[in-house]
Length: 421
Ligand code: IZC
Ligand code: ZN
Image (spheres, rainbow, N blue to C red):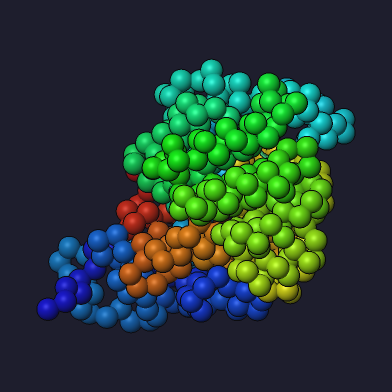
């Protein structure tokens, strides 16, 4: 007999945003037409969703040991997914803040040896434990804002040992912290000063690192940008990565439209990220090749730049996800809800589209949609209870934390906006 008794039932859910729908990343009107069940419940067993229903709770679900939590009419969504972070790093860059607001561009600060290269220095100097403790503090904040899975990149080593140190920190956090972490190798994040005159030599070095970090990373990413890595250099690195069995991501067309979106389509990358300057042709190719557009509006806001053309991408059939880009330079915030609000206020996405972009489409952006991103039977019971009567309220009342509770694989890990795991 199938054991139907639940370990936990969350009942009296005012609005249950399930994100159930077509099989695949959501595009066009699918992003807006999301399923929201009224007066709903979710049953959990062994950390997975056992049942989703409305109204009367099926008797068979309730056993002697079933815990019942009352959601008091609030809004419940799948655990949020943040598919682009630079979680593990040393130091901070507030010393560049005055330069930035005086108008010195992000790439110019990097050219002067600051920016990413400043964080490379701090990351090199930091011990494993220092990196771990700093990243853990950020992970707790992210969890308190509703994130239950995220992607974390290396990229502040630019030499094998330090890249490995960063990836090992992410691995240990994945093992010890409730938030699940998917790792990406971003060895090609900046050209070290000593390779300034012959960047292709550094590209060769990154290519040599690829097989050595295979056990520590699922994705490979490159900062493809004018003044950083060219389209040709990015192609060389990512083609080799693909041969080795990695999945691909690109920092593409963030500042100058050099053809990053087009390259992501050519390589059939899982996602292309940023895209503030992407061409319409690039977007069309992304749609055809099913590359997810992972947009990072917090970076536009913080760099005081334009927003990506999300409306055009949605119109053309590109699946859009949203992410914090949490990093010490262009977007020092862990607050995914602020990113969601910027998704509406900056990118003109509807609250439903935003929810799609931080749940199911974000899960596809890290190739984890088979286990997270929606509330359906068999998936992980990662759930957020928002202290809000509906999803519009989350986008409307901005800059605060709306989370009431977070469940990670059926376990209560945040209560009254504080971690309790
Ligand atoms: O540390 O500035 N854009 N890489 C590409 C970043 C931002 C992270 C940083
Ligand atoms: Zn980034």
